[in-house]
Length: 161
Image (cartoon, rainbow, N blue to C red; front, side, top):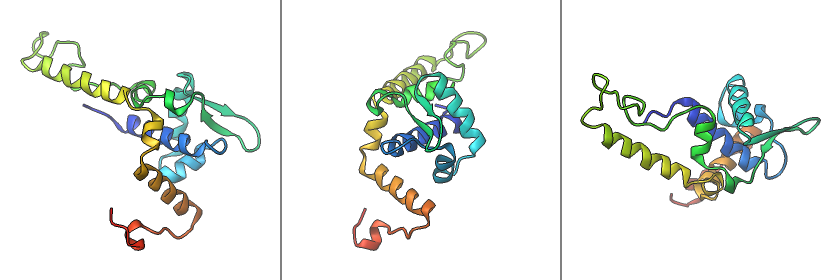
């Protein structure tokens, strides 16, 4: 499967948004700082996510972005699709023209893998990922790093991960 930076960044940005917009709208500048993603790249991604109906802008002081649906209703596969990424393990892009305009020996194998990956990512929502303790810990650490607070890692507190 070829998941490019675009798909990875879109999922990362949406997770950041879902985590932080529980309190208030989130600016792209804040996401860019926390996730170390270029602001101009985020603007392009959010333009697509907005067109797809996943996020909405809030204007004015204290504005930014928020999810347009509940995190439980947005799948990871949907985010990847919204930014024009494909979930495809084949060499031919699923067109079955891998070898001299015909399917290759392994075409069905890679199509099956693509289907499994797509089903897996479609079965996981933003909410599912956000409920993972490790994800929330990373989000908290990123908040502390951006705000300049001291970050205490689990091993520093005597907790082994």
